Picture 1 (tube, rainbow, N blue to C red):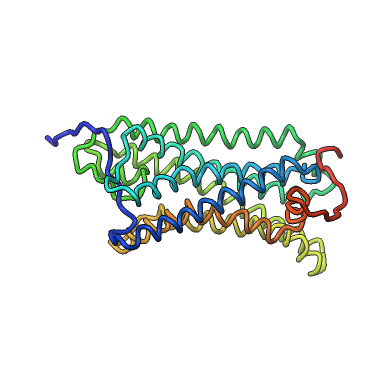
Picture 2: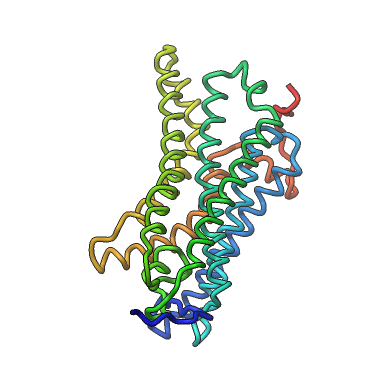
Length: 318
């Protein structure tokens, strides 16, 4: 019979064992975190304060920015604290809490990206019915469903992981708490937990991904079969390019994180891809949207001091 250990804390893997690199990594992560907070915070403020951005697309963009601020805050502060600490540990309750919010916010982003894809599909393929279909009540309902569904999904993983017994080393093979590294330390039957990852997590990742890319397939097909010129096609797709870049970045890193590693090198790559997923993705989202979106750039200029003219439009009031 395996020796069950009473768990008070878990020891986390260090980003680097080279002492000279730790301050450099700390400053790098701090800069990334500050840019993340400023970039996503700026978009959130602009979406709230700028009447010209009161439309479904920017409503969901505001949700995404709020989510990205929270998502990076789940992992980055602990990563930075551990770089300066000799005792790289997290309490049992803190670990389960981090796991919960990591999956809660990650799942919400997956569903939210699918909703944003659907929004672009309706806007381009059914422009005359767009304000009827994507009205304020429908947008609030879709966003609420995304957040609530993800909360209960994450709660499932939190409860199922917290009830496990741990009988191996309490040193996690990861930089922060997640289900997979915790299962490696568990004793007893963990097949149910593994099936939940495979079926529930897999479904909540693949289904939104499928519908997101299906939306863009319909958009391209609609524009081509309607005999639109290349110029019209390019103009329509340029409005979707930012979203496609974010979707590709998000699902690319998620896929590399949750595909089973085949070697020790793959495991190390998985660790760093996970860090990129939780830090760089949130950092790049506001840059992608602002650099490719003229309305957001103009709104940022207006809100933060410079006066530029843009025709007033409020899609909620059509």
